[in-house]
Image (cartoon, rainbow, N blue to C red; front, side):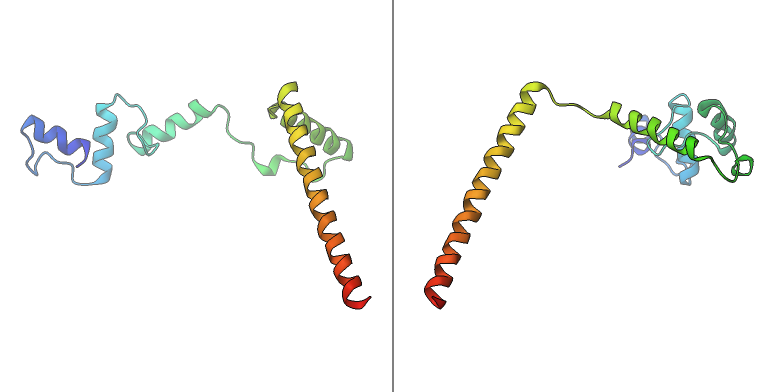
Length: 134
């Protein structure tokens, strides 16, 4: 049962005349009731209100591709690449010295265990081949 249905039953006005007939009218009622805030689906109000708010909330519109230059110089490409690398490195969550030491110890122990296992299996197969063909 939706929130609209519960409110109508509580108010005693649950007949079909007061119920919204479609999804668009329900969205309109929700937006009017919540003071124009965005609903769960990201829509609020009518399409006219959305179109007038798009440029206000986003800022300037995205530049058209027609205004771009056809070719960009190599230095600009390298500069953009380096700026993007620095921006991505700033997003990285770097480990603390303690966690780095723990991770290093775990990796070294795991690698040494695997080296011992592979060496043992190799020695076992070598002895088996010598015994079989030897």
